[in-house]
Image (cartoon, rainbow, N blue to C red; front, side, top):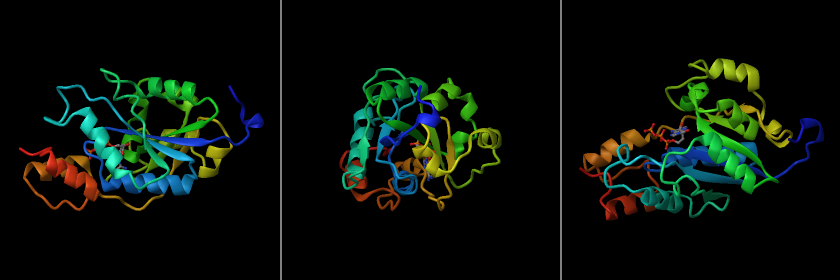
Length: 218
Ligand code: ATP
């Protein structure tokens, strides 16, 4: 393991995990903010596997991935990371990060989450191992605060400034102070189920794809 004392700058790769069901402008705004404010070299969108009984009816994992690709087509620093989609069972973030670390040994990893996820982060499988493999970048999310749940204790123990991402190999939590990005996938799915056609919280190519394939419609 590289120690901070001997650390020299290495490529910094962000991993943005989520269901992306569907990917929306809140995810994209968050991704752009993270890239800019943390000076990442690349941000990889990693859609998770969703068990068939929990998946949105009629929306396949491949379609969620295609929507991510459509949304980031004009973003040179963003790519799709298909690791979890190619498995046929749910994967734990800690295990996925270990595989990614193995395939990119020369890079520093930073896992990106919203404040809603930080509030219960210590319930995640092997959460300490996640911090041994990567940093954590936390975006503000409307309705959630750094005073909720696990967040105060985690920030007390691990908080650092974005510069720390380039100075150490893992184990820092960066709380960003981004403006509110209001979109929510749950609200977007509900609007689509009511056959609302003009949803401004989706990238246009994603909205077109949803309409073309009649996704999320009841
Ligand atoms: P839902 O709205 O149903 O909760 P979601 O968009 O949060 O869905 P995911 O696709 O799993 O679901 O989100 C991926 C990651 O993006 C999560 O870490 C989540 O906290 C974060 N995120 C999603 N929307 C926003 C937003 N508007 N602002 C900041 N972070 C967000």
